[in-house]
Length: 508
Image (cartoon, rainbow, N blue to C red; front, side, top):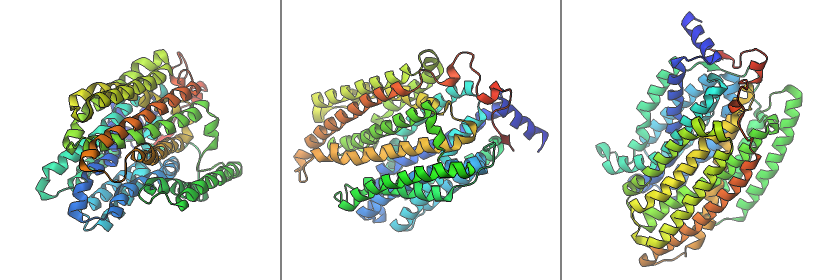
């Protein structure tokens, strides 16, 4: 280790004002943004992919579902691999693989190759994404993480709306006659840059004690998640077959077996895949519950919102994307304020206020949709979207902060993987509920003149469910600690600091 590398490691470990840490943060946030955008950017380009590539309806489903399934199934494993083999190493492998998979998607010769490349892309994202929060947790001392998670919340808000907007622009521009392919190829320069800069600026960290990968746990987690998420993803298109319900019920049995095995694994060698002791940390357990239900509300809203604007109102993809800009700006602004200024003073009340504000925005959107009907304009949607975005911003950043605030350093990767996994599960549950709360209100055969009013009515009904879910989230938030640990006045950052020992294990 050179003197420069040694200085970097010790500075990061001690939490001093090393500018290199902020370069590292920018790099991992860029990777997180790439993933967030990639989840949503494909939906806008689906008509172009279907027309240009000649993809069948089933293949189109797998272009979106394959990514989501591979991503959700691998998140916990990806987080634990980072704890064992080094978060920087797994992050670089993940972003390198994600970039390669994006190139394969962009140059796919047929729909089958595109589906396979999307599955690979999701698997690589599962290696990359859990390391983002783990690297933040290991690199920044607790008193600085509030500011960092505020930035993370802003990135989440920006990515939520930037995907559809960017997808619409790239598809409409038809760069070099490539049709939909630039939505994947745009990842190449970003990924290569993040890979090269990440090698230089990100400090390596791993669990302070030796851990081993729990292969049985990996198999059980993957099987359980696939049994739960596959029927939810494909259920509506397949007519909700009986085997789908049997698979989801069987997933609960698999998860019960997983819990029993992980307890045995903890007693035997202390290297379980899912660290069950995390759920004895009140802030973590409560935060996971809130994260899951919050994912349900977002899963419902973003899909029905897109369908409402593009199918119900007949808007172009570009107009729909531009309409969401006020929402994105509101999320980003509120997320930055919430962690840096509001949470230190008001604690969990900020998150509860966010749930109520977001619910008010949803109800306002329902009222405006009912009042203006098919004649509603983009500017008339701005107010409810700003209110909703502000509420979401008050939740996303402080929630991550609260969930990880009391997590032991050696389990930050596992905890990060669990956070991302339950959010994906919540989104999948929300998407499954869309078939009930949205499509269930639309008749099978509609004349063209009936299409718009039917979608408007279904949108209002679905948003009523979103408001109800936000009410549940408000109540669940009472189980969160009144104030995250690092915001306690005069509190040491960690137990290790109380003992006078350095917190993270960082190497180069």
